[in-house]
Length: 356
Image (cartoon, rainbow, N blue to C red; front, side, top):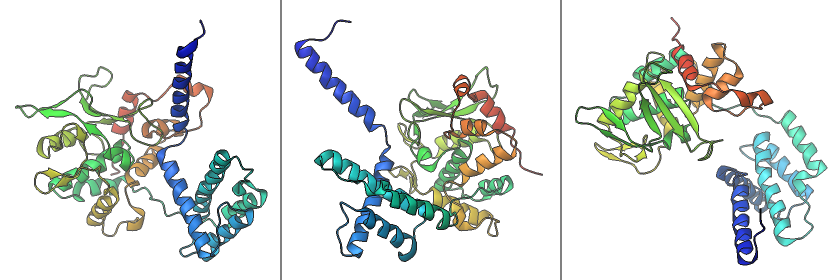
């Protein structure tokens, strides 16, 4: 290949620099930088508390912050939260060194701080407050009687079903874009570019099913989308019928978010839906006022976590569960040769049963 010369070479160099920056920008998600900023803000607030500047920080400053966060602050932080916050402090020092050229030492990576964080992880880990799975029977009751028959109730039930069988994180479900029209006969026709569609006539699977193309979520982007498959019937619920009836009656705007929250009798909010936790807790409380799981442990992540537990209880391997739910796992060379295909996912979900 002949080398570029003159202005062409300069243009190529400029283009390559821009592309290199774009590649590096994908190394961390936006939420990673947001978390780092939150951690740095907490560290600076600690400096205001002790009435002493803490940036740039010494190892002694960081050790004092660790002791403050674990034993003095109210409420006290979990050791993993302290570690996450210190990532922001570490990033600040790395960037400051690159920008200024000064020989700044990253205090978070010094031996005393690393030792303190090992002790924190061993002795200061707090009990988990994460959402916990619920049993299939409980889930079925929540889905059946936990949601009202109003526009908002239909919207919340569909959110609950998609988050369960996708299984989707709340943020991913809220950003699914739907493009469709309702024919004069009442049939729902999905248009090109829709991330939500009902597939019929697939020779690999005889029944209609929902196919979701997830472009906004953890571990996915426009170059590496995640495709979810939801069968027409599972655990006594008919997701295809539920989706099409929702589109016929509630009529979210075509080209917008499928799960944009209804407002009033005919309107919609403009922002992605963000009330999964509150809606799912209210449904759980309504359906199971004396449920086995405490209300504080039920939230937006409960449906997805429940599905993972059900698949594990049904005897499926971690690899299959990861493929169904889009979880990232450590892969061996052979993992590049196979994935759990859509037809298999549909069979797996259809096989789930509510215990008698």
